[in-house]
Length: 469
Image 1 (cartoon, one colour):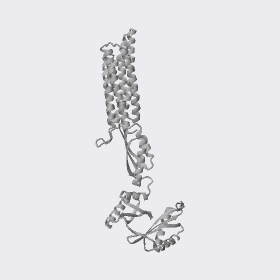
Image 2 (cartoon, helix red, strand yellow):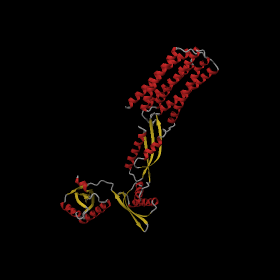
Image 3 (cartoon, one colour):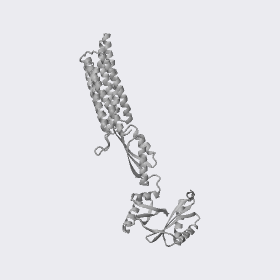
Image 4 (tube, rainbow, N blue to C red):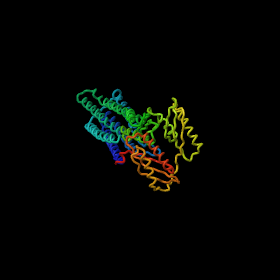
């Protein structure tokens, strides 16, 4: 159902509860005054506060579904929790008045009660109406997870029992008069005390839920379930923090997870999305914020550590080579820097990088960095060069390498007066990537020997099965 339909249904059931409370309260007051029954008067006071509570609930559901704004960035859902808090206070006030009046009638003042048929009719009607609106409120409350409506439903469901206790008290009073048993006249204030006990129980149940919501108490056991669920997401090293708060029917979750520092930004985003989905499986519709922090993984190799330090400095390293020289590790690497950077700036940047790597990876004794310029401009080509002679000479070079099954899609272009060559080379599917790289390097070197005029060669390797499709 859309938001408009949800609001309409919640407001409708809350408004019907207000109408029912008006009718029931009025009838109980009239019958209570005419009969003098404290039990019925206590129920009338109870229903009067029910009317106030129902009105507060109606107001809260009108406000709670309003969208978040600049002043209420988490929405207006807490209004429902505050409504339930007001109901709790009203119920406790009812309880205090009932206990006070019942104590007076039991020990200090005797009041004659005149039970009538109307008293039983009104109390029976009250039970029927309370049963009807309690079921409706509970159904809509569970449908939309509304704490205010659920508080009303719980409230009115206990009214059924309190009304039944009052009827039982009136029956005892009538029986006492019929069978000349004076002490049964005390059944009415005793019934009122029983109503007070029920009210205290309901108040305690509502108070626990309301205080938890207002103080941002997390649902019992949910935090542990979220930690367990999120820990199983591929790419999450640890769950560092989980915070949950509730506003009306909506939950807000703040989750902090640790990921490997070698994870790319795009991969990190993918993992955080999966974490949010995992949380919503436990808290449907929750507003989830995931914070990812970088951490060194237990399975990190020395190469991973080198790349991690470079990435932290927003630098791209490649062709990392590690050599064991007499028990000491020597690292050689290539670093790409902006082509517009001066040699001095580039050297200072690389020196800082090398120093940081040696501090974080103490097993490295020395580092040698090859500085490359990273192109920052889009090069305009002078066009494709058509030269069958060039192509045949390149084909003759690739035929000398047994790993190269065939060479195709040869393209010569001229950029800024320089000749560029790109081609595809088909190789065996099971050839190790390290060997593929060695073959590519050798082919590129041989082509440059055969065609010195070629400034740059780019080879794209393809598996043999790929060319059979």
